[in-house]
Image 1: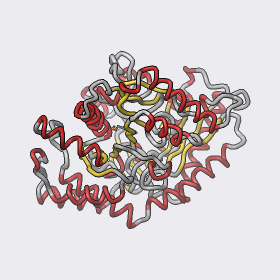
Image 2 (image 1 turned 90 degrees about the horizontal axis):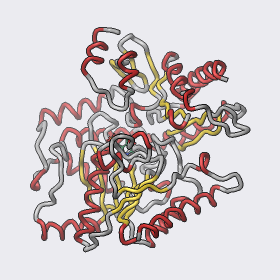
Image 3 (image 1 turned 30 degrees about the vertical axis):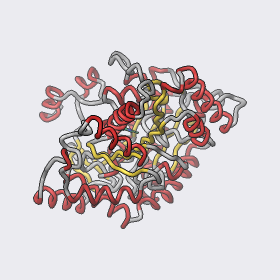
Length: 454
Ligand SMILES: Cc1ncc(COP(=O)(O)O)c(C=O)c1O
């Protein structure tokens, strides 16, 4: 281990890292980035086909973002937004975001990340249902396999068992309905649409069993990200939204990964015709250059918050860094780049090419079950045997092995070990040539590992 890696191992509790393995393997230290490329401390150049954690959509080393950050730091640096205080960058950003946001969303609450964004919305749901005089209507339904964050409340929403085990989660008023993953859970004789209707029925059954007067909200990502890159099966959200409306249940759309162009539209809500009452965004809002989230609420919810102020006084929620002027300035510069460089359209066109290429390369392989995703998000599902839909044994850790080989070969990919899948969410600036390079390295790495494992 290098000196710096040793200090790291001696000092840092790393997020989402196997603490036992880490004590032996140490860290990989990333030093610089330009465009879609990163360089680690050993001088190795890597294509980042994950855009950090699904967020560096405009790529690394963007002068415009550094300039915006520097200017805002010199002008003001920081001032809080409690008690009605404000700053020009957050005001301009809010107006710009509301112009783009799905219809019906009328106010923005700024925070620092996806978890606190979702957390804020949960608190608002509980708060307004007290104001609506529905004190029993407090339970939130999320989905197994979803990812919504790691705070106490949002780890509870997250539908991945490892985020609950031994953390004493989920909270008792957070429930989970079945996953929309058709590949994994569709029945042999079931069409995608039939599967979607079955899932909507299961949601309704859960609501009826609990009592509709106890269910406040349902939360979903348009395309599941960390839970396996799962786009909604045919007819899914149409059927789900009908159930929600029938029982007066708010719809929280978590666009933390999907928002700002990744799916080839500004928001997943636009692509799948979702009508959110509330929406969370973060990550690509600043392309990861500054921790920032924007959570949105409908006008109806805003009116209830106003009523609550008459009753309780202040809306007693907020963070020191809410509406940070540097983050808002970075977000504005980031949106300028997305618009000027037509990155949403690029994500759609290059995304199609990405999926076509992955499908072509692996169509005839018995160890790939499917290629999932849309736009610039994709996952490749590994199987021991496609014909029998046979999964690898748990201990095989196939996606982690392939990711390690990809890294050796100069590519960062994102293994999802519990699903035997490899995820990709490359920066939206990728060209078709970049996609060829990504898929070439991935294919070489996959074939090398599979020849050892099968
Ligand atoms: C869909 C979704 N929601 C929420 C979060 C949590 O965001 P953060 O890690 O910024 O708290 C993530 C993080 O990956 C996410 O993918």
